[in-house]
Image (cartoon, rainbow, N blue to C red; front, side, top):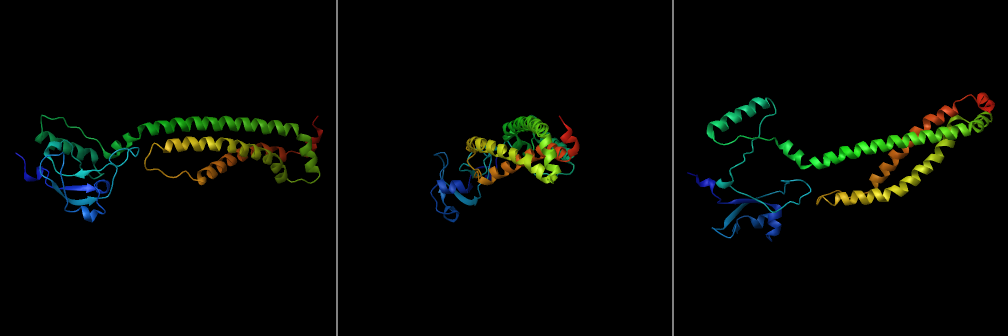
Length: 250
């Protein structure tokens, strides 16, 4: 035995429904009758809600309506207080089993459902972060080895420059500017490829941010920062060395 409210009598629709139905505004849609499924009597639209996502952001928002219908009463959304969650869930389970002892009781939190939408993205992010970190570490090792090799080869040059009055800052600049050019050259080559890959990935989402120049400027700044930190340590060590010892080096 069902109450009158258990059958579709009226509906609330979203903004996409209004647009696809050909209405010029939400106000125009109010009161209009829509026939569902090609059978029964047309039902009036009594409200319009803003568009909201029901699935992953990879999926475009579809025209939707909200109504009461007893055949779809298989899921209940319950808002609970974040305090004493285990006790609250246990109380809901007791109420369910008391009312529907022959049906399985299952529950899932909304944040868990949303997180499941992006399970693949989280796994890809972790994998990308690992290999990106590994690549940065190997690159820093190579850069440190290269600047160490250059410092050893230019030991006497650094000593002469210091004897003639060169400051530690000028010695740092001497080593750093060569590597800054190499890093910028590498960035010029890699930026278009990275931009193409990111644009392809963003195309998976109907609602996405534009890929602006700020992302590449930030990436270039971070790359230069990492390179300067790596080069700076070894360069500073060479710049602070005693020039007398440097000139004695065979």
